[in-house]
Length: 93
Image (cartoon, rainbow, N blue to C red; front, side, top):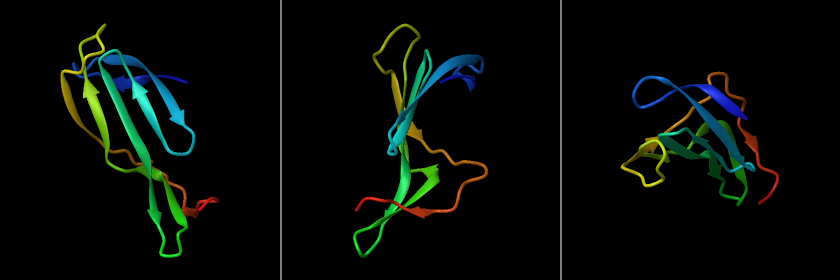
């Protein structure tokens, strides 16, 4: 999946890629920024989990110069879906 709606650190549009990591999280990568976050969930007293798929846990971000892979700055990222689905139990314990 390729996205072109991302605004880079300089305010200009940047093409980016989106990678989904099964049902655990996702990464968005552009020429100057990498964002990663896990999907939000909550463990229940009985050992099961409830998934809040429309939001993430606080994640990490790194900013680097175009053409390099060494991060210059680190930060936090959080995402929330505008029309989020209802929380649902996860199938596996």
